[in-house]
Length: 185
Picture 1: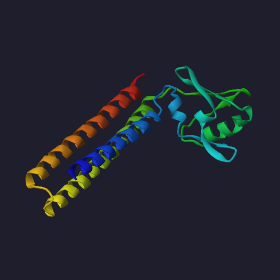
Picture 2: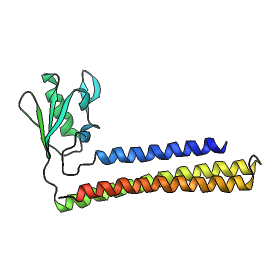
Picture 3: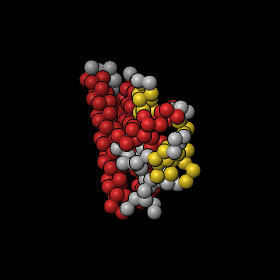
Picture 4: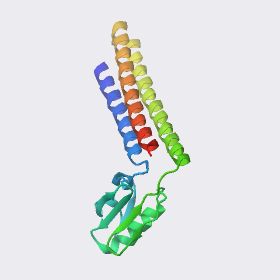
């Protein structure tokens, strides 16, 4: 019973960390990263489709992404999807490929991006603590129903706290890496 509660909580905490890390990958840090386009969906014959499934994405230079759709007639839809996105980029095309030039980030924009990353880290930590709280409530319920001893309850709560500390440390590490990447000139 306790093992089930622990494994479920651990899995949820890992998913929270993974979601935060994926969000941080899509946060623009001054250099072109093909993962920035992962969230953008293009209308592909009536089906919303990620850009990376419509063509090749490459980064020939640090501040340039090149999208080469497999079908040339998809270029206008890809451009429209990029313009509608929150990336703030203006695509240009030559009839065969789309170029996305990433402007150099100024100091103010870097600070704003750091704040966004920090806010995401804090929200993830709150989610992790919420998972811990729910798991501890389940453990207390088992103790109340006399399904486990008081010692088992304390051991389980200690293990849950260690899981929580580990997950929060992981979030802090992800944030620290992203902050360093953002502030790099």
